[in-house]
Image 1 (cartoon, rainbow, N blue to C red):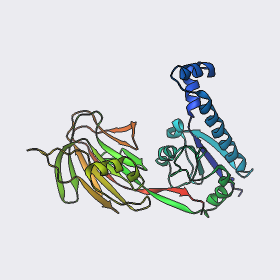
Image 2 (cartoon, helix red, strand yellow):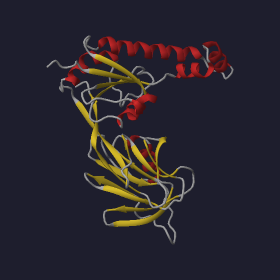
Image 3 (cartoon, one colour):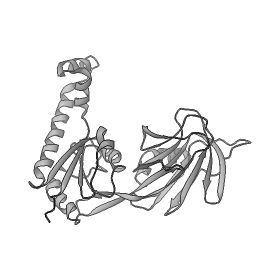
Image 4 (cartoon, rainbow, N blue to C red):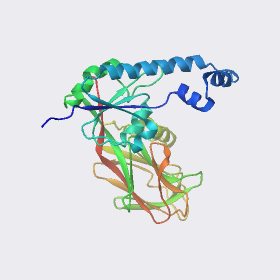
Length: 299
């Protein structure tokens, strides 16, 4: 029986230049808008053209018999990835974080089209690397960095997955009220919310929390462990502030039961629009996800 050739899924997002044109309709109107604020559209256009050249180099570097699909970041929730796909993300680190929760172990090539601007932590590859590494990934021969992910599951089965962190709290600046349980320890709390972070996430939001709390946790992206922090826990007659930070290793999980009549939310990787409602009495369990982000390395 004949088998289909591998499929490369090229994931991108709109450039700043494209978003400007979408808002202002024409380049001249966009140029006038930026000029009136002392900004220059030419640099954004150069970055856009460099990005297009990178996408083109990726596509022509793929084997000629491969199937190729292209999907934008805004369409990820409607795209069906196949188990055998080789996924190629061309853009910023954040694009890979947005993408990770939709995957189930497929190899990901993170390609940095603008290394002079983008950090490149999750997009460490150059466009020219794809020609060699994509076939290796399809054959299961690529060097993979398996980054841990976190998942949050409500009692009714609704769930979220994240590469960086899960937030549990109130959607506004009001205090979040809940009961937190870790193992045999339980505490009723009022705080600015709870962050449960992977090793990848400890370089972002969680790092700023660690700095504020003067707590240092060393967690690598591939460690099968998480860390949680309670933001600004308020001690009172009814609420405590002793269970505010801890590692979660292996199968350990954190349970949080909402005491919020409205406004309670659970969201992942800072994307508030993609959230779970967390009203009074609901319980969320947060722990390590079984899947990892399999990020292809140069080797």
